[in-house]
Length: 184
Image 1 (cartoon, rainbow, N blue to C red):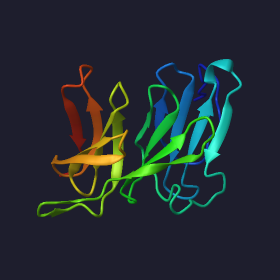
Image 2: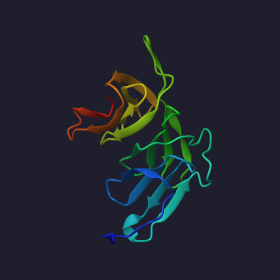
Image 3: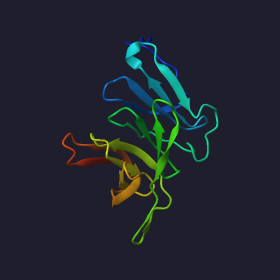
């Protein structure tokens, strides 16, 4: 069979597993995981037909402390200035400036909550509130959903959600969070 895309095709780094599109449709970001390069690819100015494409980090090997791990979760801030990236086994959510590609820090998702030790985690899918103030994400090995404050860059809560949480979504009114589990 011959597949013919309806639109333009753009090359990103190998293994694009996650995808986020800005609300205005002018920016896309892919999470490229699996084997090296562990990276994100930012595609800016999509509507122009000649987007600027930038891989972070630009070299094939991941950078410890910059983007040492990545999984499928991505979210673009409402003002299109930042992208939040699920850090997989690094147990972090990384933050990057969309215009420059520069690292803008990270949110540490590890904690010890009463008797539960969440110092090891695997942050997977994530979603951002419409106002950009909170991220809801799943920790696939901690069997929890986390809530983080993007302004303070702090973990606010851990909620057990069952075995192997994989996907997460907010209802339109943001009064409900839905978690999909793939565990047995």
